[in-house]
Length: 459
Image 1 (cartoon, rainbow, N blue to C red):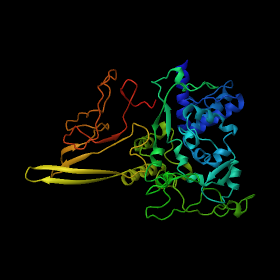
Image 2: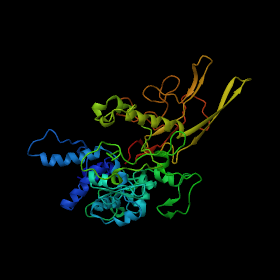
Image 3: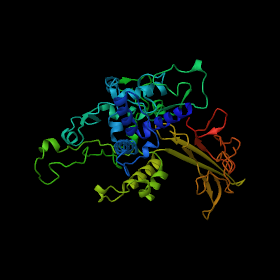
Image 4: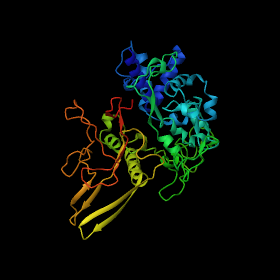
């Protein structure tokens, strides 16, 4: 029973970010109806409304609406309805934030202020408004279509919009504590209360202590002040300039305006629906480096249920997923790391040495986030004909780092080929000198479980 409760809470916690809108809405609705916060599961994210029977149709329809919201992932309202700073205080006791306050007590019991919102435990602002970065937005188009009023709120430009879901604080489930070290009993019961907590990823804290930090938390100047090159998350991941460095200009929505659609009855006056051009306008790229997933979505859109082309924008020259992949590739090439190689050829001994330096260009660790991300250096020496005569960090078609004999280097596999027996713990250390082809410089996070075995588990 305890394991089942923990398993259910794990899924609900993960979907707190990854299926945010469905997970939150179900919790909000269930608490309003029953006084308890219903959890959201991975299976529930797959529910669809059809086929159905008259007997289960009402429940299935409601469940399918939560599932659809969850499958939308981190969509517009996730960020634009998030409450920060003064708004977080204003809506702290709002009924729609009751369930998330319980999560804060479970996941971040000793944290206060913004840190209490880690692991996606952020409060929401009013359901009747959405925050935006530009002053004096026209309200009628959104009010008439969504019954929501857009409002100017500078907090949407802050890195704390990203920080809650990019600071993950989770229980360590293979290290249960004795009762005298558990957190106090709560109502409802907290299945995580007897497990110690650790950071699973710290992308936002890494930025806070980097040279890119802005030094502000809302209107509060932090003791360390700004870094040498202050940039917010949005300034890197939502660029507002073109390739030449010029500020981007755009209207903040694509709607039927007085000036760009044929005349029709009952239209509002131009002053209420003709949107002004704003600048600087941020591209909502928000890309990481998951090119593999993007390419898979382009190859099998029907199976994955992801449209490769928006039916309302069929005149576009480049498909949206290709635009996303291009943005990922550009980011990887220009904004992740800089390598400098200085070769030293010893003519007398016929030996080659090369000094390799790597500079991190990101505002956090590289790689950052979940522990299975890694970066490695592929260093190759070619002869006059272009053939590889020596290499470190080469990989095969499956992405396995191999030596000159196509054998996996130490640490690439943790289990034997049957996946039943563990191999001895092994990994590639951070080398000062590499002099063999079965040595590779890999930047990665390696963690062990309570038994000292390497693991990819977040918990």
